[in-house]
Image 1: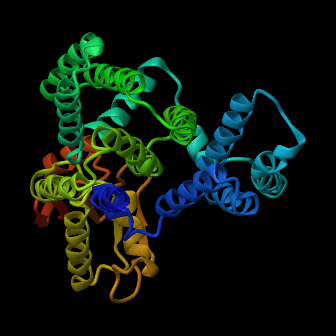
Image 2: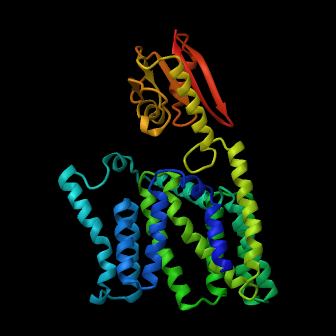
Image 3: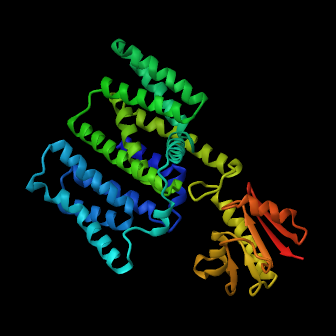
Length: 398
């Protein structure tokens, strides 16, 4: 029970999970369906597995990749394609039916805008690979967690006199120091290689644990491969969180198997660590997105900017802004508007001479357009709203 409590605590205090729990977006439900799909697969609950993987595939394209990963793992682990495994293979059929129908009715399998944004050039792939690794293993307090786990592994191994793994431990210690100092893509990769190599060789896992670890690696490999070649947003990585947490807890359980009380002490450190990370990001983080707690500051300045426009009665004026603000000004369902919607709001293309009001924000900022407007004597800054590091500026033509 203690380790289960720790797993739940770790997930709850992941900043992206906490933030996304308040959004009406598919990532949280996708995370739930992933957990249930894995759980029912390893427990061989056939109909429950088909139910949850069906929902998984229909929720988002990523779900199809996860379902395909489970099928791939099953084939690789059994080294055969048997009739009695029908319940595994059928998991992907809801997706095949849906995407075929979508192609017939709409003319495309996947959303064309995101397909057009896919980029498989070497530079882009390496850049996204670094972003993914940095977010998962460095940002939001996770570097402290990994370094702490590394220290515990090294100390416990010396206490247990694991002398035959001395080279592995030296490699683990060196990569951990490099991770702590540099925190770049190479240091993360070296640390992960050292951690995986040591824990796989030094610990004795049950058959069930080995099955879960291997299944997790196949799922994560295909999940991140799909994420790399597609349009990337940080929140898309959320479904991988519980898988990583469970893998970490398996390792910690092996370290402190004879000391179950430790599972009640560890959450205190972890809660403090992640709570401090949230507070720091709220106050000091410069980048604003929907995967960090400082998004609330961006919401606040957007609210203030829209209230200001309403007070000025600019409902019929031509407004040029960015995508999110355009949606906020024209869609009452989002909740920003207190009166009627604004009639003439654009966000695409270049700023036109007929555009009377310009609104810029720290989110989706086109720095070229922003700098040109600031230098243009035909526009004047009417109001600037700021909360933390988030800001929004309203310009009017003279």
